[in-house]
Image (cartoon, rainbow, N blue to C red; front, side):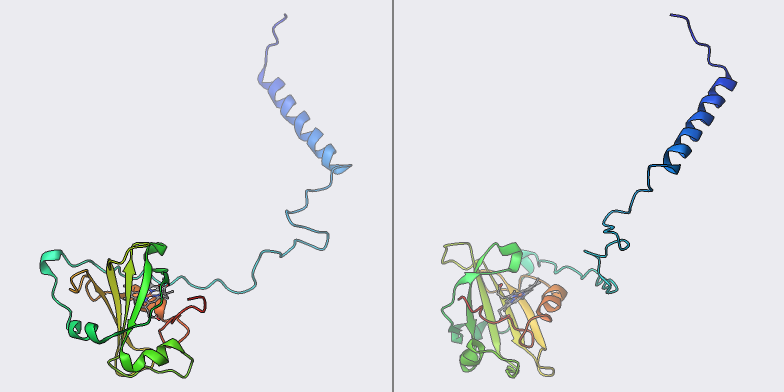
Length: 195
Ligand code: HEC
């Protein structure tokens, strides 16, 4: 096979030919490629939103677990015995759906809690405790509590209690408050209709 010597001018010539060919190609039959989603009336806006993107909330500080040896009994621990068990058991969304939940509420507010409406405002001092169980287990792994504070209808204090009713997370429970702010009944999600 005869060897072709590629001289600089030969290379230049090839590049020019290629450019010319591509110009010709789009000049006649090939139309410019339509943008993806273009249905003939301009680019389709399907799947796009006109709303300005919501600014992402700043990352909330994570609740820090209190080391076992430093945990203190919960100030309201005595109240726990007086709470009414609502006899509802169902899946909990807390902790990535890991647990089943049961619920206990201050006796005077049990009925109101069962039938929450927009008009329900829990009085200060109301305690709601959600107990988390491993699926199918009776033992309580962890308790999440809410205590109603004076002030706004949705002013709640959030607490995490371990198996021995000691406070297990420090006061930085910003994530609890942030999610419960979205709850339908002044900070409370209530009992889902299916339970
Ligand atoms: C991402 C959302 C979210 C976060 C974060 C969250 N919760 Fe909840 N919480 C729920 C939902 C949804 C329910 C309804 C039952 C369920 O799914 O567990 C609920 C129910 C409860 C209840 C029963 C009272 C009621 O009706 O709302 C208590 C008490 C509670 N949470 C305490 C806490 C505490 C304490 C924390 C923080 C350690 C916390 N929650 C963090 C979503 C959240």
